[in-house]
Amino acid sequence: MPRHKKHRMVRAIPPVSFFRPQGVPVHDLKGVVIPLEGLEALRLADAEGLDQKSAAARMGVSTATFCRILGGARFAVARALCNGWSIRIEGGVYQIRPPHPGKGG
Image 1 (cartoon, one colour):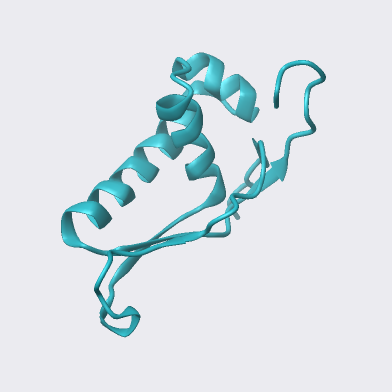
Image 2 (tube, helix red, strand yellow):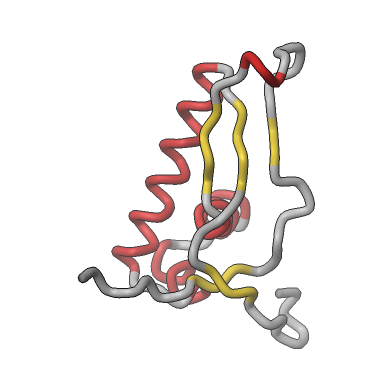
């Protein structure tokens, strides 16, 4: 039996969880799903510019695990953008990280 996945720490639930190309009816769309920890990895690495070691520490995972999460999220986003697919953010194995006083979360 496989091990249980360790909860990944994320800052918050995103305010928007579905994106789609403009002008394409929803019923005609293919799509990808990114788990919430994948979005957090994208946020830490690409939006905040953290190195992988720092980002992994913030998520409470090893650097190798962070790299796998980030790689999967980047792959999904790239496929969606290149093919005109929707992106849904949902699910995953995560825990909301309590805010750090004075650090902005």
